[in-house]
Amino acid sequence: MKKKRMRLLALFLTTFMLMLIGRLAYIQLVSTESFSKHDVNLIEASVNQRSQILKIDDGRGKFYDRNGEPLAHEEIPTLVLFPFLNKMTWPIDEIASIIGRSEAELKRAIEQADEPFVFGGDEPIELTPSQSKAINQLKIPGVFAVNEKLYHDQTPAAQLIGTTNISDAEKKKRYPDMNLSPETKIGNTGLQRTFDEFLLSAGESKLVFHVDASGGPMFGVDVKYVEPANPLYPVKVVTTIDKEIQEKAEKLVDDRGIKKGGLVLIDIEKSEIVAMVSRPALNIKDPNGEGAVNMMLTQKTPGSVFKTVTAAAAIDYEAASPTRTFNCNLTIDGKTDKQRELGILNFENSFAQSCNRTFAELSQEIAEKDPDFLDKYAKMLGLVGETGWQGDVYHTEVTQLHHEQTGKVWHDDDLKKDPKMIAKTAIGQQDVQTTPLAIANMMATIARGGKKEQVKAVSKVEFNNSTTVVDFPNQSIGGETLSPYTTMKMQHLLRKVVTEEKGTGASLRDLPVEVAGKSGTAQTNIKKGELNKLNKWFAGYFPYKDPKYALVTVSFETKENSSSMTPLFSDIVKVLYSKNQDNSEN
Image (cartoon, rainbow, N blue to C red; front, side):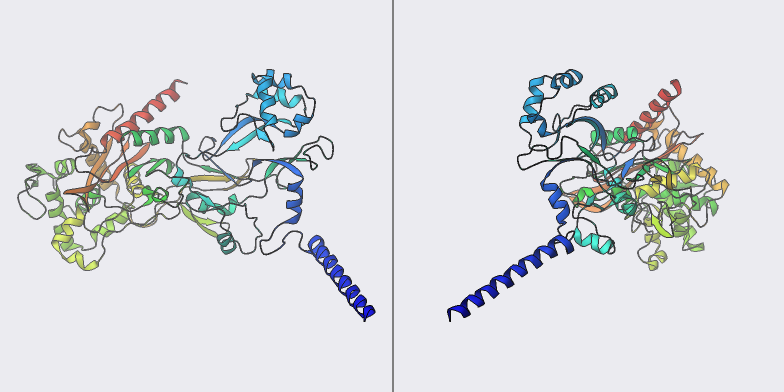
């Protein structure tokens, strides 16, 4: 009996040992890169356990402005120190002298460190090129001057650039054939989402030092610099944004107290977004909150800015002769307007002073001949449909502006038969919806003589060595366009809004450059107490005789007694004028 128990115990122990050996073999030989349900990479975990690592760059592609300035990050030459320096004798006095700090400060920082760190913490010392060169020439193990990429909570054009996340579920859904690590970021919104396949990390850049259990050197004192195996990565996405103008525009929008709205500035010749400001601002701690929505790509009621469409149709249908006058003391329903009596006005002055009655009458007359004319002319001017660049890139359809809304004129075609609905629609109310970007592009279209072009936010994508992966040429928007004659007349009308003494843009007359444009105030059917909330716009282009920029400034759901948008429009014009003056002097 005793022998039997001994045999059973021996069999059990043998079986148990074989199971342990098998398990160990499985872990070390089979599942080294994907252990357990959490897909733990055991090789990486082992290396990390016996290494001190400082990540210099996560390897994801970066965004730059049109002049090559980093947008969503900052590249700063910094001093990196490793903790093992505390156990060595090294020329700390020389480093202190180079950076202009005391030896005691350096010693204290190293003594408090458990892992490699950038000296200076949250406010790192920014080294000069000569300081960086001097530090690296000393070749001190554990002391490096490196360019670290730092990310800030607030970046220029935050909603346009977009956000990222590390959702495993989304990674598997979007890239089922790729084995992406848990730390790999993917694009969530904006250009981060559009260009995600280009931007995906091909590997981190990091400084690695192997240590023993006590944190001391394991294989001498060599620190290894690890970077992606492919030197072409990470890529650079070169946007059309001008960082300097963008930052000034954001400050001006905030200074003017715009809570919901912003501005769009377009380079007319290149059809590129130079600046785009959206408020509420993006909160990096709440990336899916209200501030994540790019209001400049969101359709809203345009109000009288839409009279630009009705006016173009009136010119083509010869409904607005120079001698014809309109009773602008009346509302669109023909009742006495107690709030805004403008008198008897001709067509040009009606546009300049934004007389609703004039455009109600004209639209009702034209609709009898062509019920679809408002749709037709809105498309001619690019207010309906996508405005952003889209096309084929490596046999894949790319739409640069993620989640851009397309606008509309009518909710129900039956309303085209109702004269009251026609009148409301002609002045940019009722169902009319369009985006600030589309309105800015409408102004650019008129300024360039009627030619409709897609608007770019990215000019090209480059490899890390600055060779071009793909560029985005100018592309026209299809469909009918305004005739040269109608375009010329519209240019004249938009200028008269500013030059006419009682024009709604008269406050812009004294700017250092000539401006043309159109104001708009739209009812929103939103109330706060007894007061209606309004959308307030000013859209235009400048200089009038040699157009370079199209600009929209807008405040959504604002109070009736709030300021118009001409002051903000004026601010931006002055910024650009000053910048152009500086450039011409240099």
